[in-house]
Each structure stands twice: as structure tokens, then as C-alpha cells.
Image (cartoon, rainbow, N blue to C red; front, side):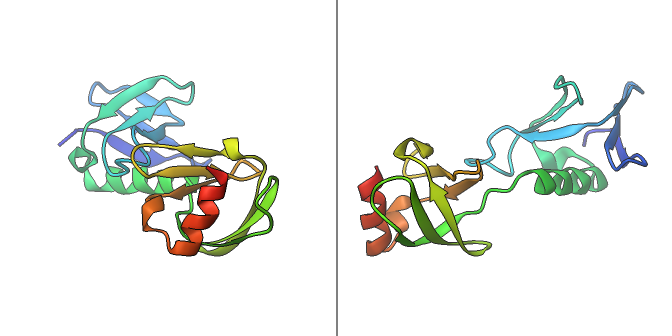
Length: 154
């Protein structure tokens, strides 16, 4: 178990005290592999972007620190996961997509095919016209309609 303390200051920013006694304000937790291994390694970064501590396994953090880190990550990371592609307005871009995500039904505008990025295996990241990213964890698990729509854009 890592020996460190974490709290929030009056402005709501994370403050971390390392075992050597050094205190760092404005700590930002960053997942190493947010899509492929969201519960895996993470770095605790300074407000200036310098790595303060590498955490191989978040379970090594004291429970209260781990909870604060998870809450901080949840407030910064928003990547709805697409479960179903319902429809698209047109098969050319820009097009309006209607999808069902883990956060409910929504629509977004896809500016161009280049905004669909392949990751490992059958995982895709789709970025809308506002820069919001949607995760499609397994395009092969889509229903027939969803696969047909997606094939037109890949």
C-alpha cells in the first residue's frame, strides 16, 4: 500500500502529500490506458503536467485516496459508450447520427469519416462536431442495421 495523503483545498483542487513530506496542489489523475484498461495504471500529475507519482495498480492506493482519484477522473472523463446506432440522416458527411449510449439516446453530427478512429481490434472512437468522443467498444457486436450504417463510413 502506498503511503500518501490526499485532500481537497478550499477551491476544490486535489492536494497530495507524498511520503517524503512534499505537498502538491492541483494534482490531476490521468489514466494510462483509459479505453483498453480503465482500471489499470495511472499517473498523478502536477498542475504543470509533471508526473508526481506512477501508480501501477490503483488498488495499492489507500481507500480514501483511491475514492478521491476515481471521483476526480469521473468528473473529467466523459466518453459515452455507443451500444446501438439507430440511424443517420445521410450517408455523406456531415451527417446527424442517432445512437443509444450507456447514458441514453442522443444525436450528434459527424463532420467527416476521418472523425471515426480505429483502436485495437474492433474498437472505435467517434468524435462529433463539438469534439465530444463516443466509444464503440465492439463494432462487431452491433446489430445488422448498425453494422450496415457503420460500413458506409469506414
